[in-house]
Length: 148
Image (tube, rainbow, N blue to C red; front, top):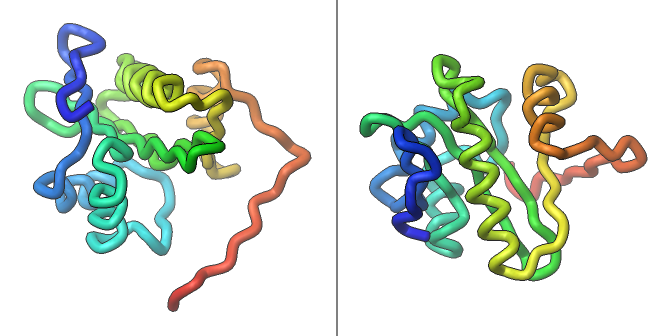
């Protein structure tokens, strides 16, 4: 997936490389809602080293306009950090990223995808629903930080 074909005339979808990581971190500070303990250079470098196709980028005219982390553990498909530049929202970037993610999951044998979406990020709720995702209110996320 290192050079996926374009899903539209103006959007290039590709896997991130180590050279992209500083730009991705800066992008998340501007475009992503909230932060995580692993939102640092070491965390995403480890992700890309372990699974070079897990971090997918969307570019338009050479600029980063979107990201999604596509995690597959051999059993379940997980989506994280779907973030789109505020000026590029509602222009197909998120849909192109999700299509690439779902294509990867299907190729790996995945059967169901889930996404981490902040409850307070109501604008994202609309985008996820439009893409066919639904919340499962019977589940709660339980978290334990393993490092300080």
